Length: 504
Image (cartoon, rainbow, N blue to C red; front, side, top):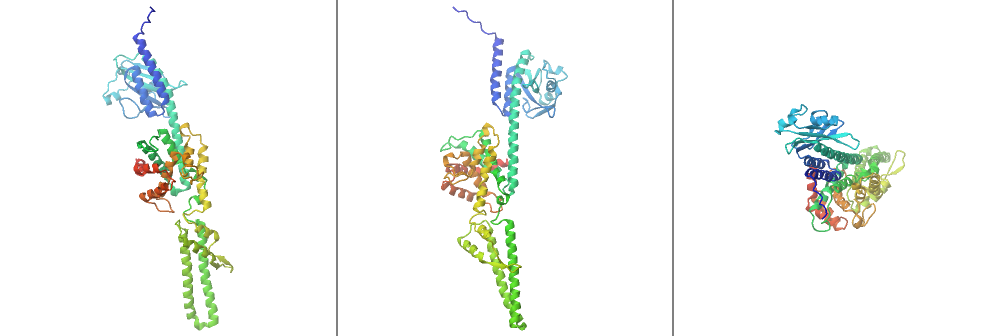
């Protein structure tokens, strides 16, 4: 018979189990980037490793020279204390372990927490957490060993080992948090830049983001159809949100007069047109007085009253006609859909003239003005519309220059396709349906809905919710928007839920 290996002593088995536990939690900590989830995990494992009743973890805030804790077992509030104050503060300051068999026998122990909470602290073990450079980044404090005995040297060693691993994990989590804050700050600043170019659309980017993210979350409750298995993780939702917030950033590359054009003629063009009508008005009056003078010479002064009456009637008629023409022009200048007959009348107006101060005949309306006033829908000419549509290309080029993290790498692609249509009629690439990301399809619906219902556009009135849905439905029926996503948009009451979430 082969000799049997004697079993491990109980203490060695227990120690091995604790070391294995530390290794397991190290793996878990290295994968966790959310500080609010990481800190409780560290405390739970610390309590297990040293068999303590309670544990607290304090992170060093070097700028304020304080220790702070979101997770002190037995307390629901954030705790802050100066470095050097109390047991934890002493450990943070000196980097030395403090192990007290009887806390109340040591003057460094602060009894305030016990007094307020009714808790009775007996033994205390507090160790420093050190980063890879050996710098103290915080402390872990364990209270009351469950066996009733003091903490021993093995507890110190194990807690130090766990603290070293925790320090690295916390540093990574804090760095991850800083990167997130950096991205948030960058995105917020970019949205401010967009909206400063066109203040009339302020809030549009944020509302589109709220609508799109709300729709993405609504897919979690879809169990049939093409999106039954489409789910978005927290990082994917963040990716969608960033793409939605930045989808119009390329508008910074569009000329401001075109971007904010509220009517078919630019303000300076309308000012010149009005001046011409004023000159034409003066010309009519001048021509009337010239005819009066000629008539008096021909018919005699004793016919003055009769001549004046005739000319007053004629001048009034001519001025009224001029005013009617101006009113018609102002009507055509608004972003309304023109009736076919109005196009013909506009082109007839190119024959109207007046004499300038040099006696030279001038057109009342310029050809380029007639061309602009003839825009059938909206306020933009074809050239201006192409310039506006170029904002998508500007957006993509801009976003592609940013070194996005691996989890956010599709932000440029998602934003790039938000004006594409399923039937291939969208812009700027007119790409086919299969290549349009689902995130972009959701954003398209959100973008159109908000553009229709927004009350801050000077060139149009806000469209009521139901009418906006009817307009979207027509685009769905025309094969331009995703039918299933539109159904989810309605049934999940996305606009209502997004508004509720936005208001908090």
